[in-house]
Structures are given as structure tokens and as C-alpha cells.
Length: 621
Image 1 (cartoon, rainbow, N blue to C red):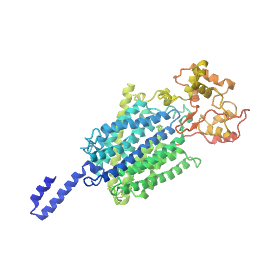
Image 2: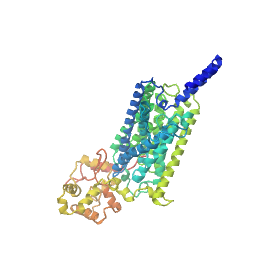
Image 3: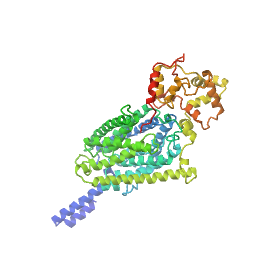
Image 4: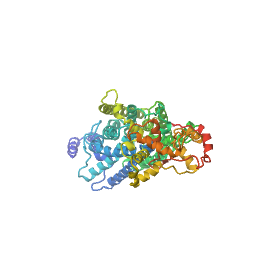
């Protein structure tokens, strides 16, 4: 470059006008080449030689934000585990663990190079395979800080599918998905995040990952649900509705709070530093994120009261509405005014909830509601940039949106980014799930057979079937199968024997009411049957059977069956009336007595029974 300036000075030194024009052109070309340097992808200004404070401050901010974002994996796990049926909690958490493990492996080897490698083309990066920074202090520090931050995005995009396929997709197919999905995520990340990406160069704006994280992950989840089909009995009436109730609303709410905390790091950390005027961008993003969730929360509360005629505030509605507002504000939070967060968050909540309702009515089974939240609200968030973006805000370079006098240019680019992301996700995920399903099932017309878990695993629960976590039925089988001599020689067997065969201790009336409300009855009409003496507290019909022999009768039934045989409907219902302890200790108490020792109905339950007819079991979506 120095030689070019010397040659330029020798040629144009006699002509002042020509000299000035040529100097401007040369300086512009120099600035363009400087912008392609990898350092400039993260920092706007390069500090003087020997000065590293600017790099250190920005890298510390990026690293801290990455730590916060990784806590979102805990939030996703808690939310998904609480949304699924009992018996799958451990399986859900294990999937979130393998998300990080295998996403990190792929992203280190090839993902980062595709997203941000140098050299690069508008389609993909062609260097940094693997993501190793070498020995230079500044170069390696910038690469590693960027790598760890973008890895958190890639892992988040992958884990979205975990909730969509819960209780149906084979575990090792999900591991394979986590390994491969990151590769295709990296292409979209290059297009919208990297300075050489073709969407970025055209002027499309995605501040914190609306396209590569949420829309890409949500569409992948939709394709997976279409290939897998619904859970057994979800829509055909062959299983009671109570089988599909969330196992722990407490875990759901705790998961939302963890995600909420992580989302602030998600959005604010996308400023990629706090030096210069980027600290203003980070703080503005925090305020905008909170404003969006305020609007989403108020809208969700109004929505749930409207859907239930003012009777209930359904946790699913509040949770998914707030998450929808968070997703919607993600691509726009750096480019809009704080007041614009309210309409974006409110519409994002409605779009997420409305899409989930539509999906349910189409008999597409998404236990968590991730498709509506991430795909639906993510699309709205991308489009909202084209409506509300403000080019006058400090620290951000973006065209004005339609509502601020910028015309349709930016909105058109946002639509293009949305369509391209959806098409890319549909292409690769359809190929993946069809190919893997066909290879396992060996049936070109039935990939579903290769993708879904064994019916017994779906019925019994993956916690017991795959991970060896014993449930109540397993404890009972172990107790029945061992002899009296073996049982007496084992402390643990004594414990399980007492837990499974002794009569339940008497509960207070309040605890008994709580036991009914947590949803272990197939229908609240069971209360009427108990009051009439037609069934016991476990939901078993009493047809002239002495209660003292009930445990031995059940034991004989279990002993007659194979431990791993497919359960009949009555046996399955018994397994679902076990004591289920959720992630946070939420206990669905199933062994209780609604009558006192004299056989009289406990106080307060008659009033509850009379009102139970108007409180029919229903899953609101």
C-alpha cells in the first residue's frame, strides 16, 4: 500500500486538481480494504500500536454476554421438561446437554469458518477451519471472543427443535441433528452477520439473530413435526386428555425467567463491545428488550382472559406470549426507538399465540409451542425492522423504515431475508429427516417409522426406557418380582416395598384437593365415582374387591406381564398415577385418600365435586 501511495504522488504531483481527486479515490480504496480486515468486523477503531485496552474491554463484554446466553440452555431445558408429560423430564434435559456438546464440536471444526472465516465470499467463509487463532495476541483474542459468542447463538438455534420433537424423536437421531444443523445455520449467519455476506451487503438488518436463530430453528421444528406426526392419542381420543398436561407448570415458569435473563445478554451482547458509542447501543437494547416484554406480558394476559372467558390465566399463554415478544424484538432491538418496542412486542405475542392455536387445530403436535413462538414471531420481528428502523440513532447503521419515511426499500430487503431463510431451512431439514428416516426404516414411503421412538418408550417414558431412571411402575415390578427373603435383605427394597404396597397415609383435605387439581385423574368425573364408592383413590374400579387385597391383585397383574411388554390401557393408566416428581420438585400426588378412616367424604370435597362439572379438562392453545 505504501508503494502505491509513492507511485501515485510521483504521477499527480504537477496537477493539483487531479491530485486531489485521485487522492480521494485512493483513500476510499484504502478504507475499503481496511474494512475487510478481520479486526474491523468486531471493532470500529484499531487502537494505537501497543495499546490493547479497547480490545480487552470489548472482549470482556462479549465473553460476559456469552456466559449469560449459555444460561438459556437451562431455561430451554426447564421450559421443555415442564411442558412435556411425566416420564420425559430427564430425556429433555439430556437433549439440551447434547445440544451444547455436539453443536460446539461442529461449530469449532467447520461452523465458525463458514460464518466468519477469512478469506470469504458473499455465500460463505473459506478459512479458519478449525477456529484457531494462532499465536498473535490481538488476532487470537478477537477470534476467540467472537467464536464463543456465536457458538451460543448456534446452540440456541439447535435446541429450538428439541421442544418440537419431544417424546417422539429417537435420541440418537437428535444427536445427529445437533451435529449437522450447525453447519446449515452457519450459512445463514454468514449472510446476515458478516460484512461480506450478500444479505448484509445489500442492506438487510438483523441485529441479534432473528433469521439464523429463530426463524431457521422454528422452520426446522415445523418440518420435524410434520415428519414425526403427533403423540399417540393426542388428537384421536384414544388416550385421556390428562396424559398431555404439562408435568410441571412451575418448571415452565422458572424456564421463562431463565430465558428472560439470558435474552438480555442475547440482545445487548450483539453490540459486540462497549467502546466508542457501542455502549449506548447495548444500553438501548436492554431498555427496548424490557419494553417489548412488558407489552407482550400485558397482551398475553388479555389474551388468556379472553380465551377462558375471564376465568383463568393459563401459564402456557403467559409464557409463550412473553417469549414471542422477546423473539420479535431480537432482530430490531438495535435499530429502533424505545417506544417502538411496545407495538413490536405486543404483535409478537399475538402472532406467537395465534400461530400455536392454528398449529394445534391443524393437528400438528408441538408440546412446547416453539414453532409459533420462534418461526411466527421471528418472521414478524424481521419485518418490523423494515417498519420501525431509525437511521438517526447513534451507534447503528441502518436505513429508515417505512413508518419513518424510508419507503419500502428496507422492508423489501427484510422480506427477502425472511423468504431466503425459510427456503434454506425447508430444503435442508426436509432432506435430513427424510433421508435419516428412510435409512433406518428402509421404506421410501415411511420415513416416520425410522424417526419415531418405540411405542413402549413413548408409552412408558424415555426416562425409564432409555436413561434407566426408575419410575413408580419399575419400583413396583422390582418389589413384586423379588422373593420375600431377597426383599428383607435389601434396605432399598424395603423402602420401595413400603412405598408401593402399604396403604397410603391419610392426607389433609387441602392436600387432597391439591392432588385432584394437579391433574392425575383422567377426568374430574372420577371424583363423582369416588364419592359413590365405585373406585379408590388411585382411579381403580372397585367391583366387589376388598381394599386389603387390592395391592396383591395389582401385583399379580404385573407379575403376569413381561416387564417390558406393551402396556394395556388400564395398566398404562396405572403407571401414569404414580408419584411424579418434576425438575423443581413439583409433585403430582397420586396416592391419597379422599375419604377419612370411617369412609366419609372429606370436608370441602363435596363442594369441589359439585363445581367440577363446569371445570372440564381442556388444553388451551
